[in-house]
Amino acid sequence: MDPIKAIVVDDEQLARRGLMLRLEASDKVKILAQCADGEQALQAIAEYQPELVFLDIQMPGLNGFDVIARLQADEMPMIIFVTAFDQYALDAFKVHAVDYLLKPIDDERLEEAIDRALAQRATRDAVNSKDKLMGMMMEMTGSSALEMENLLQQNPAEQYPDTLNIKDGSDIVRVNINDIEWVDAAGDYMCIHAGGQTHIMRKTMKELAGLLKPERFIRIHRSTI
Image (cartoon, rainbow, N blue to C red; front, side, top):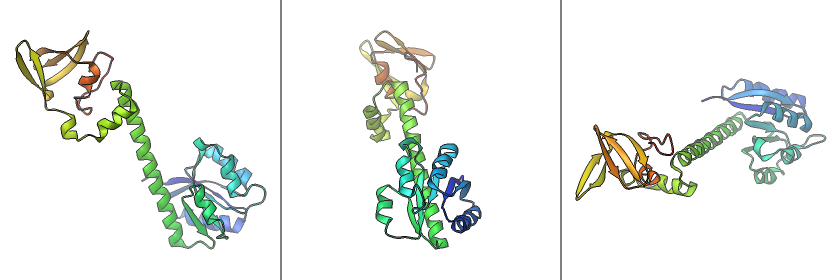
């Protein structure tokens, strides 16, 4: 797992240096910068775009909560508050802080806070990956977000058949899905090329795409799978 990118913000030099030394000894954290006040913190966050900020609360000028209030939602890193005062804990978790560490910081609590941040990053990355996949699938199939969610929630065994039943005059031809090489559209019909033969099926491209496993078939054009 890649180390989490972080900055340290504390107006007390000794406290800041002590935390820096402990974090630098960890292979779970990569320190990008250290800041002595809220204004420096805002500049460092804009410049380095850290994933995590170890943030003191009581500082001259902008305090820790002021820093958070000045950040835009799309640049908001995860926050671990580091303070000598426990009366701010409720406010800290109201702004969705990852953790709240009291000085002097216990090594075990520091490790726990870092692990919490890593777990939150993993969850966020999983959500982002799903969103990207959903976007790609929506673009390829022409489905809405709701339709894609419904497809993902279906039983995979029920979602994707092993064969297609294609009407050919008065007969029904069963085409093995694994034999399909490609599909192209011809007006209101789908031309299914499988096993050296072409089968004609009356179905929309969107409907047919929903029957084919995405790990095997991709819609590369509006009229081609």
